[in-house]
Length: 229
Image 1: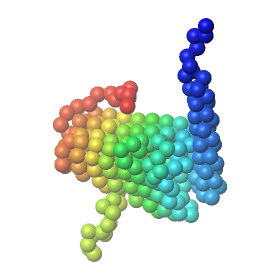
Image 2: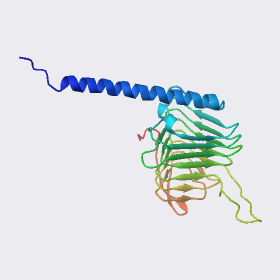
Image 3: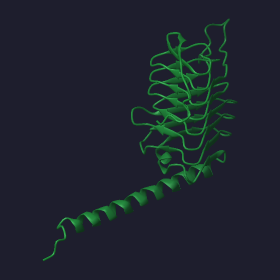
Image 4: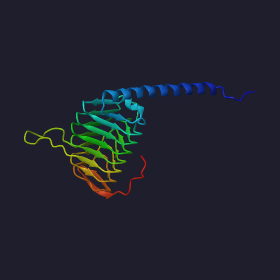
């Protein structure tokens, strides 16, 4: 008497068809990414980056530069990642970074002449970064859901006070929690933690636990370089 499960064979074929379907989807997505790079010579997407970037929204003016490094991943969601780069702007996404779009889209904007750089092993979870002067996120830096990093006020205050973009730098192994806003000219030192719903208007020293509106150092943080996501 056979002891083989009656559902084993159908399940096996279903799994095979599912695997074939997933390979076909990935192949189609890779083709779309190759076409994107062909249309925009300034775009470089590493072969090991997620094919799911084919579902992202790209707004790229002539002369825009975009680099998506090895092992960068995201979910296959329509409009889950939005990348907008003006002429002369640049976005660099370092290796093994995760642009997580489950809760909200990840939005990256680089204006003319500005560089937005995300270091290796980064984690952006439904966050927004906008660069008019320049924004740098260090290695292993996390931005939580709803958090925003802006290096400009986006508009002039009035006729006598024009918009003044000032570069923002966030160091290595920093955790910016949910719904945090980091404004122009700020430097956040390495191994900092910025608490939920904080407004960061001035620079924060390394290894600081800071929170509030405006955010102020209120404690000390140790080495975060080996803290898992």
